[in-house]
Figure 1 (cartoon, helix red, strand yellow):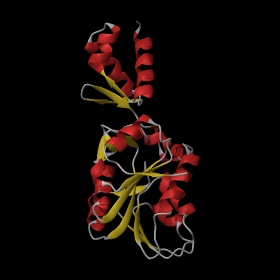
Figure 2 (cartoon, one colour):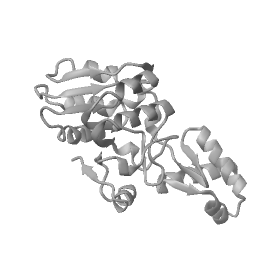
Figure 3 (cartoon, helix red, strand yellow):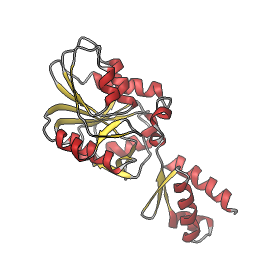
Length: 251
């Protein structure tokens, strides 16, 4: 089998199963593990796979640049956003992560709802100008890929916050890789914010389920639940439920 055909086969398997174990595929195809690992390295370099010990996972499309992500699964994000907003009670203090799904949350948030919103996203903060909510903005080095403040200064400010809810954006939700994102500093900022809230809910539109990115954010046991509109029969969701993860269904 030619190398290009092997890589196409591996990518098809990744899309179907969400994971490849190199030794198993090598045995099935009668090839060396080195050949399969080489192919997986090339798929990783192309941004369609994430190499892990023993194989690879399907890469999340949510690591694309900010402008591109606005056009990815917009209807799914709106459904997830509406379900997330329903969790916010009047008078509560809410931390909103950056990203296109939290922007959709602002669109779904009643303009007259009295609450306090804390965010490290200048785009999210600006979109709240016409809302009754009090808005506090965390400053720091601007990570332009996701339009959020990160770094030591941002984490230090975050450590002085106390909130009821944190709505966490990730780029991947995978049963074995966990909750992931594409940048280590952004992952650290998300952990800092999660540590300041009583409950953390993950915003998981359809393109994030069953995929992974390079950097771990939080283990499943440290979040209250995952808000998603992915079909309940999806194998990833079944695996998550089997591991005790609470799912909040978005209609």
